Image (cartoon, rainbow, N blue to C red; front, side, top):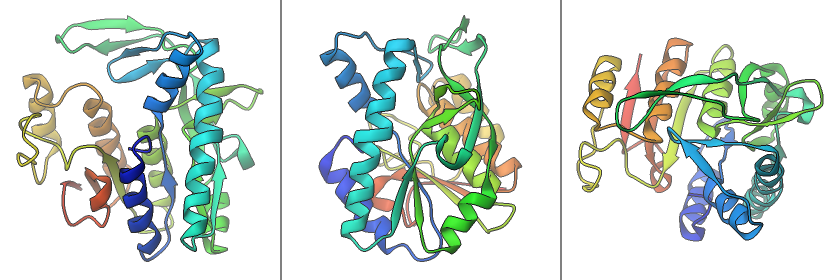
Length: 254
């Protein structure tokens, strides 16, 4: 989404006029993949998630924490939004640990144990710090990078960060978590954008994953969505960047 100029412009326009307190979490995987290719580094993905070796970590830190984050911040400032760009290391806002090797369900239904490298699983989010920024009129823009408290940056899935931040803020606010990607919602037929499933229960999601209807990068989105619901988030919306007002897409409620 952030890689496409028109989609990003549409997102920033709609985000700028959204009323109320807000936080934006972004990705940038395609830009990182393109930069890695230019630098001669192979990109590997398993189950919709990136394998992050030492070279890849340097690249995603540059792309996510620099190029993408600051372009979004500048774009929001141009629209009158007092945005501030952060990684998880800034202000110790998101701390994580390096993910140990774990079994991952592959697209063919089998499981494989995968070492994701320098990838972080979130341990804590400082909702107090974020709340101070928000109540001070700032809009945090979070890059998908965290840290372990021992001097190491870790690549962390943007949806996971969004879900973790939403859950932390849900203790203080009524939170709606919106996942944006290139499709209008969760589709029953991946080739038919009109086949949006308007609402999904957790049981339905499991069945759709088993059937292969929900696959690839959509699986971690669903996992994060239901994790957020179980931890106090009021509503999760999965939609396209030009529908972030929540009027369209797939909705998941408690």
